[in-house]
Image 1 (cartoon, one colour):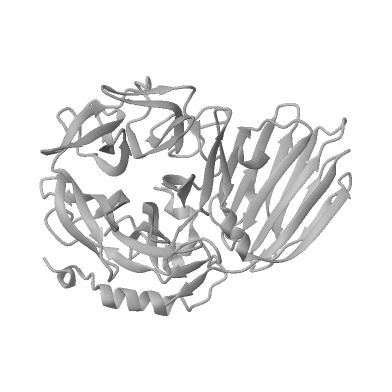
Image 2 (cartoon, helix red, strand yellow; image 1 turned 45 degrees about the vertical axis):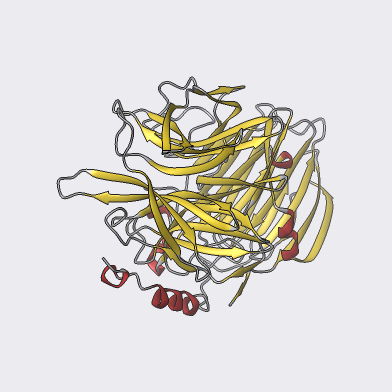
Length: 483
């Protein structure tokens, strides 16, 4: 089955990408990765090789539905200058004819290797899930090399996907998302041996009944221990957590390999408290651990009105992860400071709202110094007649995100606990359709999609009775696409 028979002509699609990138629209993001047409979702294959960061992502070039899944590819040396996006992997044979699903990448002998899930839907309604190996070629395509794992292990359904590669104790491993025949989510561990990939068992976590599917497992190895990331589906909403349709989070502790078990030092913790965050992938680059997420939510397509214009979703900013006293912190990569332009510094009492005019691409760092009588802090980002409101309740140590005053896209509330002593710290980035917040030096993060009806610069207001606001705001430039 040729790529032309499927309609996946790389030369034609890459040419269309170049043409569409030149078109303007008020909802085109300036410094968040997105494709100029079609739907993107999971970031895939994040790795670093010979001075270049490689970022793949799930992509449907034919529309804004979750169909025809391909891999798009970009590369960058500094997270500011990017090679023009291109089609890298697409459905082409009997093992992936209905979609090239998520996976990971690593560097071996100077080559970028990828593992992904080939999806096949049979006429009788059955699904096939095949774990594939590929290699990135100089022409930007992923060459299929061989089948790694032909079927899920006994006792598991065909919801078997998202291979994540890692090495530990000089052996190669794959984590896979799995679902038991009793419809419970699991992370499955495979180890590479002389005869191929061997199923070592499910990773025991102590979470026996925790959703019906665990997608996108990742493993990061810090000096202090291990971080197991995954995305459970089917969790009931609780006060202050699990408020999205599907969740993304982690366990912190130690991965044991034989038998597979994760000794967690605490509860499952969400990575992002916003409305629009799912399926993150993380990787190690030198001493850094970097994470990128999908700034969107599956099965919520009606909340993203760009689909009427032919494209949908973006990726989050790259975040550097660190562990401090057993707690995970997320902060924007330092390289993003190269986007900064002119700045404005402000320091004012906040009894009367402090007003800061922003541009449509903006970075803001501020600190609200709380007085002895400060009980509440209210921040608002106004886009003409619309606004996003943040309210911090000092007594309850509770932050509320409220986008009910936005006219288009998703609305609703998100509430989460945020520990603050006498200084509320907030670092955030405003793009055309996305705002990313980092609270208390990255102790919490929140991604929010917004679609203002008016293409106007936002206005920030901050009010805190008895408090004082100190901060700096930078106008930001756009990513630069080369080639």
